[in-house]
Image (cartoon, rainbow, N blue to C red; front, side):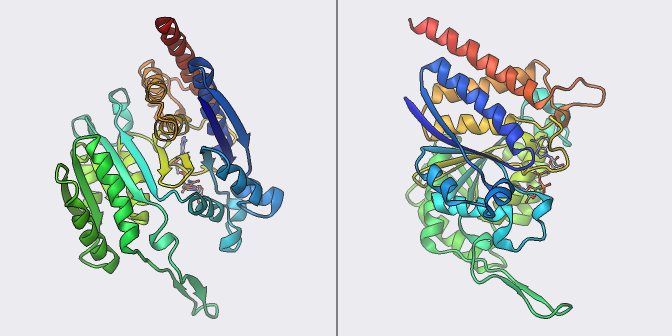
Amino acid sequence: MQLRVTSLPGDGIGPEVTSQAICVLEEVAGGFGHDLELDEKEIGGAALTKFGNPLPDATMQACLGSQAVLLGAVGSPAFDHNPRELRPEAGLLRLRQGLGAFANLRPAVFYPCLAACSPLREEIVKGTDILIVRELLGGLYFGQPRSIEGAPGARQALNTMRYSEPEIERIARVAFQLARTRRRRLLSIDKSNVLECSRLWREVVTGVARDFSDVQLSHMYVDSAAMSLVQKPAEFDVILTENMFGDILSDQAGGVVGSLGLLASASIGGPVGLYEPVHGSAPDIAGKGIANPLGAILSVALMLRHTFHLSKEAECVEAGVTSTLKGGFRTRDLARLGERTVSTEEMGAQIAEFVRLAAGANNRAAS
Ligand code: NAD
């Protein structure tokens, strides 16, 4: 099978974790007999530095011409004072919009061998396996009008939260479908006691539920959900929520399972899937070779599953991550005091090696 992928390493730790994810993808392609066509382009601060634009046309065209995009992270303190349109993050928001990727899937899974990494007691976090389905193209992050206006000292800022029925319905359908592949439970999170957007959200989601009578739908307010997520994370299954609530709750879920560096994401729904770790560019650790590449590597697994429908290959990458963690390999964010740590590259190499051996065994069994 031909795999046409555009890679956008971006800023900070983005290039460090993306290069490891690509090594793993290359092993998958070589080992399972796929033809990988990779094109690397700039986004975010890297693109601003080179082209003065956080999402150059050449980057957008390359992404639209491929089947899937693998992104590292964007964001750099060097651009913190730029106007909004000339900040690295503006490039990412435009990319998501350009790809039409409205459904952001963010799994958060607890690995028993990482029990010590969670700030929660093991009996609370044990069994946690959550899939957050976050609406990605609406709400406060995209709503117009938006502005900061007025004279210094008396300025006013405005953002708009806006959702339409079709926007809510299409993400709800994705979430219900995914719930069918798991425990058939869907929790929709909103703030319908205060926000009109959330009232419409709850009404539309409840309406869609009529087409999915085999899935048990429940609703929760976001503040209560944030509390439950740390009190009883193992009780959550599929979470459906709007853009900003999903952004916040998924970082929280990362903390619950041990590290934000573990979390992968898939943004689907448009013609080209976008795959990226949940974390940002982490300028505090960039360039040190200590970033955890697992979120990026697990994003490759999501790409194999959701864009290429190669479930055996996706499972192989996931098994590589589990085996590497069970083998005691820890980047600094996962290590306990005094525990030996490995670099970003060593962690990636372990998983690439696992994939190489597993693909070889698979090929021998097939021949
Ligand atoms: P962040 O996710 O970059 O970092 C938060 C904390 O987690 C930091 O202490 C960091 O060192 C740690 N961390 C993150 N990823 C890690 C990894 N793979 N391994 C080990 N530790 C890791 O969030 P932030 O500090 O709030 O933001 C930094 C920059 O990233 C900002 O410019 C922000 O706008 C941007 N950002 C980008 C994205 C994205 O590209 N999708 C997402 C979030 C934030």
